[in-house]
Length: 274
Image 1 (tube, helix red, strand yellow):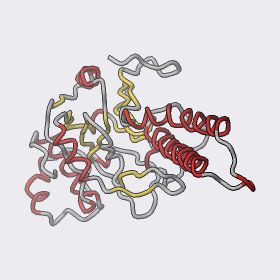
Image 2 (cartoon, helix red, strand yellow):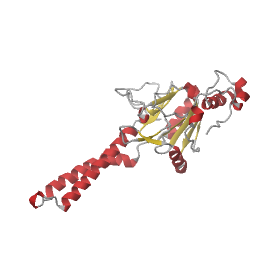
Image 3 (cartoon, helix red, strand yellow):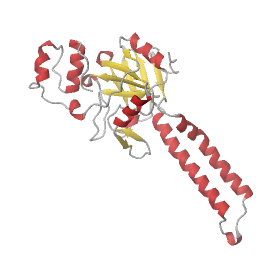
Image 4 (cartoon, one colour):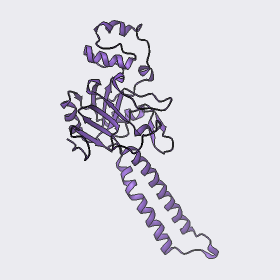
């Protein structure tokens, strides 16, 4: 089990973040800046300036190489910073995915899709699974609709928290009516399928099962929820609802995603939306 980080509540059973940052991004973050500095220092030390202060070919090549290394480092740092806080937290209050890093000094703006935490109580979590097959992970990545986060070079899926940036993946479904969603920009509809990369598969499974959430291993990947399934609508004439309405507990579901969650919870039927 992943050891809780200092400062977290004692009830935290599992906390992991940073699995979305690939090896290439980590290497680029730590190596490209020193490499650029070395190129610049070596060029200034051994290259001579042309007559009349003209730029020589070796000097021009060194300048281009140093610039390329600096740009590569800048993009790597942006990716590292955007994804390093993405992860999973399991505690007594429920499941949290997305930004599970330490509390920020100020609230993230709505358009910072990767900078929000998404939490659900345990009564709202179901259909938990691990996606391990590289082909299934790739399929999940293809289903993610990407958009560039304003003011950043980071691209994030527009159906948060569906963040299949690497593998293996943890996926689950939640009852959207039981989630207090963060403020999101206009045109961005959240998904009731939650997806984040993980490393410690056994630790996560142990923590989830401790809270009564069974986990499928080596499962097929789910796609993000269709926007229409999340939209609030009148289901009183929906044939599926009319069939099961008398057998459901609690308030009338107002979206198809919430109806699915209620059917799974109250009737024990398999999930059917994705």
